[in-house]
Length: 153
Ligand code: MN
Image (cartoon, rainbow, N blue to C red):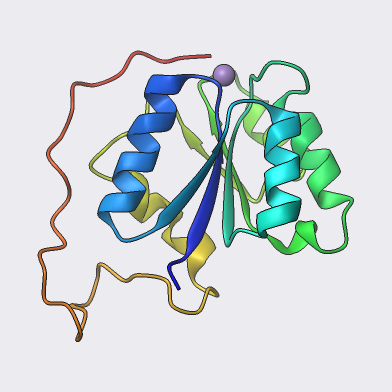
């Protein structure tokens, strides 16, 4: 069974880029366009990892993190923030909100999936792109780079 990753992101271009990159590395993705939908999907699908934008319609990423981390079961799912915020102190705010880490926007297609590795180490069956797979010697090269994206809120 493929490892499933939930992406909560309101910008379609960004969502599609992340989903595309993850699928290229063998992950299955679930997508939510706002925080409440993301919480519902997390509860129903119990993904191996949650990637969450900070600025979202309705409840923002900070509130999503707070609610996830107040749930005995959902709090165990690694939660990675995606943020264009660059101000000093935002890193602390993101981590204090309950995120286990964050990845800055714009998404770097060359390194995005590798940046998630530390959060997937404990997941059985997570695809490894460091070592060749024994059952499927297909290329694990990164997908072709796209045009760099402008930072999106
Ligand atoms: Mn956003």
